[in-house]
Structures are given as structure tokens and as C-alpha cells.
Amino acid sequence: MTPLKVAAFLMLIVAAHCRTPGGRQQLMDASYIEEYEEALISGKLNEQVQLQRDTVETTAASRSVEIRLHSSMSQVDATIVDKHLVATGYDQSGLPKVTNYIAYEQYYDSAEWTGQTRGIHVIVLDQNTGRVVSYKAFDTHGNAANTGALVTHLTSISAGRIICFAILDEGSNNLYALARNVITSLGSKQIWSLGIRDMWAFVTVKGGSAIGEDILKRQPSESWPRDLHLRVNVPLV
Image (cartoon, rainbow, N blue to C red):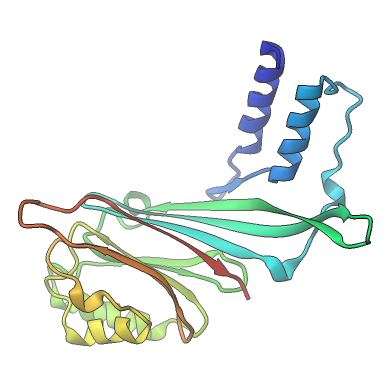
């Protein structure tokens, strides 16, 4: 590939990742980028090349969201990637050719949404659209009343919603038994193991099944454990 073609392809990648209003990041589907790349490599990319995205038909039943949670001493952030399976044509037997591609990406961080509130962060997603419907944080380290507020919030969430948990700094000091029992009822296996300055992340469907969970225990030689990263895939309804 010539330097000019490399530059053109890099410009394509940058354009495919442009941000739109509302914090959502629109991404071009992978098969479309691959088709451009093939045209670049073969030397066929010119003004006559026509790649039709509008012929791609989305199959709604195949949608899912990939959730990436980051729990640490200084920040919580979440990336939610809406993924589609789409038909890009038909093979010789008449069956759809299916390609996995990214539709959009949402990014949320604790500094923007909660002012870096210490404690347990709870992000709730709509099970049909994958969109974030609420982001709240509860300082369950400093005040037992905040643990009561956490219980009230979790109780109020509708069945079917996707719930994501992550800790910023410390969240166990005043996390009393009632709250731990409620989180256990949502499918957590680790919440009773959560101790001072441990990192923890958990994704579940209310009224359904736990999707993923991880905990990093603080060692005696550590002020805090290393950052925790949890990555799961959740089918949409």
C-alpha cells in the first residue's frame, strides 16, 4: 500500500469514529471498512467506487450490548457498545450473509456524571435499547444513610433492566447486611466478600440472571488493589 493510500485509509478510520451530539460515538460497520481497505490494497479506490451502506438490513433480534466497566481508586467509567448482526447480502443458497458490526458506543465516567462520588456506582440500562437510563453513586463508605438510599434505588428499578455496579475508591465500610442481601438477590456471589478498599464490578439483569462479576481484594501490602476491568456481553430483548 502506497503512503497516499495508507493516509486515505487512516482518514477513513478517523471519520468512522467521529462523535455526534449527546455523547454517543457513531461507528462505521466493520464490513464497510474492510471493503474500503480491500479497495485501497487492490488500487481500485477512486471516484467511481460505490459502496452502498443503505442496502444493509439490521436484524433486530440479534442485537446485544458489550459492557466494559472500570473500577479504581480514582475513577469509575463504563463503555457500552451496541452491537448488531446484519445481513449484507445473500449467499448462493439464498441464506443471508451475516456480519457483526458496531452500531454505536456510549461512554460514561464518574467525573462527569457524579462529581467523583466515592462508593458504589450504579448504571442502569434499558433492556430493549441498550441505552443508559440512569447513573447514580452512593457513598457507602462514609454514611450508612447512603446505603439505605442504595437499597431504595435498587428496589425501585424495574424488572428486566440491566444493572451495572462498580466501586470508586471505597464502598464497603457502611455497606450493611440489608444492602448486601439485596445485591445477593440480584445474583452477586462476591458482595459478602467485599472488604475495605477492595475493587468490585458486577453486571446483572433484574429478575433474571447475573451476567458477570469480579472482585480484587486489597492485599496487606497495598493501599488499594490495581484497577479492575470487567467486560461482558448482554443480549437485548
